[in-house]
Length: 236
Figure 1 (tube, rainbow, N blue to C red):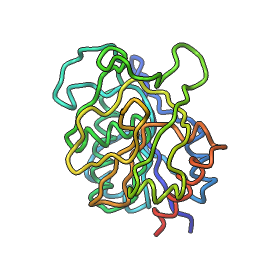
Figure 2: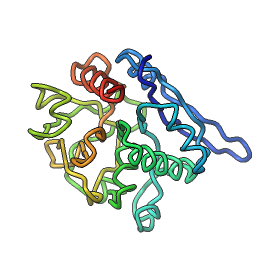
Figure 3: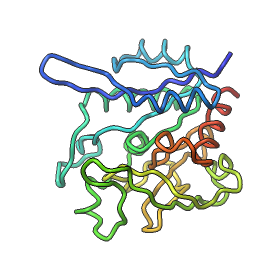
């Protein structure tokens, strides 16, 4: 049986209407890597997570809008576009439950920020205003995603995933980033401006976070290796 990988959904709330949606590229990447993508609505409860975890082998925390700063003990002090709290609460609980269950986790962009916040870390709310001088991590308006290089830390789990690939270009669409690392985390990749582009938990070797979007760059060798190794790890 193929490893079953849960992929978190984005949530839109407009009046009484609540809609879940997903960039199909995530599911395609998991499928092409040999996994079976599955999805759950954001309905957090202890019973839900117990049942969901009995059905899956791994979790992908996907991209999305911004986490409300209250989740890491701050007030809004910079330009942000908020994700619904219901989604944030669900993602935080799903991450913690999956971590406790010892299953594989790949946290992408917003998902990496969820991972950091879940472990007590904080975020730059807006790089342009809070970290001036950073390189372009997100294009303005409707343009192709920004591209920049990342350098992978030698000896990290991410380096193990990527083999001999230590420096390469990535697809970037974020204006927030990890500021203070959460408990137990270490950096596994950086961009040329020193921003944390990847994090992992040495005590939980099945857990990796990356700030870029490999699903948006499926032709990249780094993207293919990343998803293939993650699905294999989930199935091990």
